[in-house]
Amino acid sequence: MNWQNCIEHSIKFKTPPPESFFYKLKAHDVGFEGQSILLLTANNGKLAFEFAKRGLQVTAVDQSSDFIEEAKQQAAKQNLKIDFRHCPAEDIPLEAHNYDVILIHQGLKYLNIPKILVEARRLLTPGGFLVTSHIRWLPRLDIIAKKSEDIILKYNSKWENFDFTGEIYPMPKWAEQALQLRAMFFYDENLEYTQENWIGRLKASGSLSGSLSRSKLLDFEKDLKDVISEIKDGDLEIRHRIDAHIFQFK
Image (cartoon, rainbow, N blue to C red; front, side, top):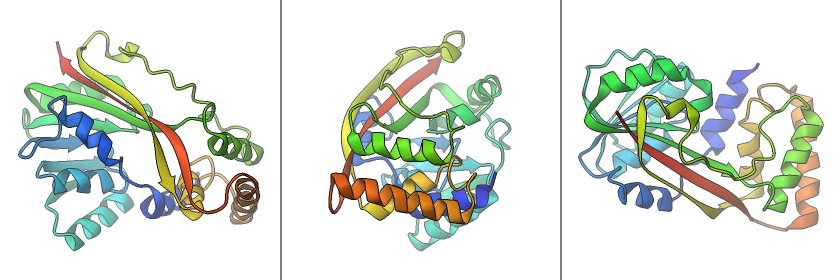
């Protein structure tokens, strides 16, 4: 797996959630100025930037030193005060009971959930929130998303994260024993991309940049451009489902 290619595309093309996401979190007491928030998968840092701009005290961790170093540089350029840490989310060298919110955005499937629950309980203030969230395109409702998945599968038949049905479970099984659901939401929004940004967003996936040779990536890009051009000229609007679960420990 060539993670360096994935990281480079993620830094350049992955964007933070839309404004509506932060509005809906605030409706459930998450994301207010002055709150302390810990992001367990910092990725390219752009979500951390958004919370810092809203006046939160932000700490963000990631196992990738490349992500952390890039995020530190970009935060400094924007005069944002964020504590970025290079460490695994399951073992964070931070003081106990110091965070009002712990957020896992997109990265839950990559983490050791039992260890995460132990660490989150240790780090949260009494009554604090553990939040999970996702932004996923909807191939059953959006033709460009569907055609894009078809091209990905053409080049990587082992890819498994296709054909998202849109179903969101109110209480996921992994959370049942330790957590109680305080609130949840999901909604659809058409997110805007240039064709270059959409293709770059797809290439940030390990199933593409992490798995294919440079020549195969170029072939993938050409095929996808050809397919998109048959459907739409110019910029794209891709339908996504955005969800969040807000938990507290029992």
